[in-house]
Image (cartoon, rainbow, N blue to C red):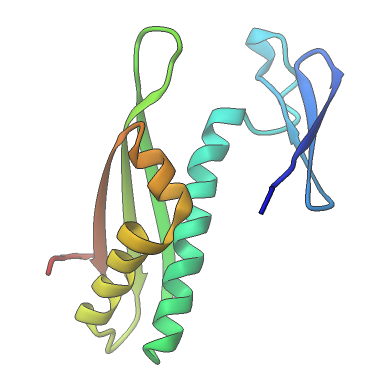
Length: 143
């Protein structure tokens, strides 16, 4: 299977990427020649990571019949100081809120996503250290 993206330069530092019929603008902030009309390219990798893993987790929890919860993922990445500037450490925190959430199922769903199913996670693990934490109702969950 081949995935394609077509990216067109619009002007200055503004680019328009077309992905599966969807358009995504990328730009830089005004201090470095952009007009801040879209996100920066590198943080989009972090959005892809959280989206990929989040979709896995929701799907797995649905199969486990876990319902009635709220869920968000916070991602923070630390960059190298030298060029090319890359992320060397990525912290991914999964936050769940809800009554009667089974900690073991929630933790297992995150574990399956982050170690087996999420392709973005697998790719980024080859380039950076990734730390994952799971929280249920504000308390960290461990196996």
